[in-house]
Length: 262
Image (cartoon, rainbow, N blue to C red; front, side, top):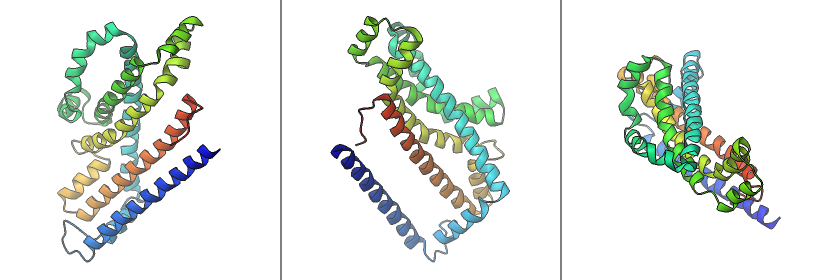
């Protein structure tokens, strides 16, 4: 009970400090931009007004929905393939030795460098964006999953062997719960990468999305709208990360009921 109380107090303390930091940053932004007549650095109230006005319109909601759709599909594909391939590599040494050179070669290529290739392969559309997001988010999940599978406690392996637990049951009830903390770390790293690739892919050849709005607003000197897109992107990133942190706590308790949040 004491441990739980301490954990709750620590979580509340972190929330208070985080809120104070966010408010301080907003206050500094407001003071620095107050009364600004620089078109490239408009005042924060003007940006917030444009954010409230534009992103509630049908056009703004359509662009936001398009970005969320491609981000969700790309992240899901990257996570699924990353976990599946990582589990195979982490448990089968000969597979790791056989494909490691090819994986290192592919991992060294930034996903953004493959935009022309993806456009030739999939054309100009959502498939290109989904491919780039999936490719970029795959690597942290794959590498963390493989490392976690490689470092499973030998006691778990011996227990599974002793009780003759094999196949799907071994993977579902022993391997995945043991590797889950590392998988979640990989996903946490993959989320901001997916956001970056989402915006980047929408800046080239796209007709909708956050990146498209930011690029078009910059090209037509609608700089307040451009800044509003950046604000929405920041809020979106914070919201997704916060929601994921809550889900992460639940999943970690499932993988180890004895675990208490620090």
